[in-house]
Every structure is written in structure tokens, then in C-alpha cells.
Image (cartoon, rainbow, N blue to C red):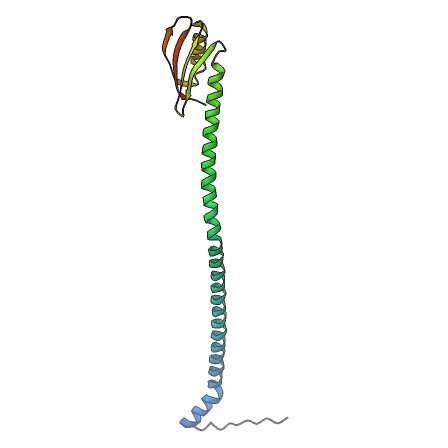
Length: 174
């Protein structure tokens, strides 16, 4: 094998040769790197644009779901309001039924009811009995049970053959 060894010093290059040398050796690397960066930026931009399009599609889907279900949600809220109103009425009826049953259970069969007025807040009973004992036992039973906060036996009058009374009951405790 032959070796070529040049021991002479290299001659000085002029500016045009230096530019050509730079262009052939280093400029091509710079161009390749620049093209690589440009391609990377292009693909990154493509990826970001695709993500934006996907997010817009998701947003449109969710908006259409909200639009489609808003009427349903409105109807559900109306039904819920009506159900609460129905539950309130049922609770009031249950308290009313409980008050009615309890009050009638305390009235002795010996007492004849002449007027029975039952409202949301109070019960007024006008009646009569042959003796005062059934009236007293009913009053004592109502006092002992403490189902009413207000128990007012306002009048007891002796008639020709019967005792008449007026009883006011208020603030029922279920």
C-alpha cells in the first residue's frame, strides 16, 4: 500500500475557496438540521391542530347532549316539585288521619257528639252526656296522653236531663 504524505505547508486559501469549503462541509449540516427542525415543527403543528379539532368535536357533542337533555332536566325538576307537593299533602293527610283517629278513640260511647269541627290547627267538640263522668274521663285521658298542647274544656252546663260541654283541642303532637 502506498501512502501519500505531503510535507509541504498548505498554501493560503482565498476567500472564495473558504466560502466553497464552508458550503460543502458545514452548510449542508446546518441545512439538514434546519430542515429537521422545520419538519418537527410541521408535525407538532399538525398534532396540535388535530387536538384542537378533536376538542371542538367533543365540545359540540357535549353541547348537543346538554341541549337535548335540558328539556328532560326541566321536566324532571317539574316532576320533583310536584312529588314534593304530593308528599306534603300526604304527610298532612296522615297527620290529619292520626289526629282524627286519636280524638275519636278518646270519646266515650256514652257521649253524644252534637258538633265536631276539625281543622288544620284545632278540634272543637260540642256534645252531651247523661252524666258528667264520661266527660271527665275523656278530659283526663286527653290530659294524660299529652297529644294536644292545648286542652280547653270551656263549658259544662247541666240541662234538663243531660250535661252539655264544649271542648277545644289545639296543637296536636303526632
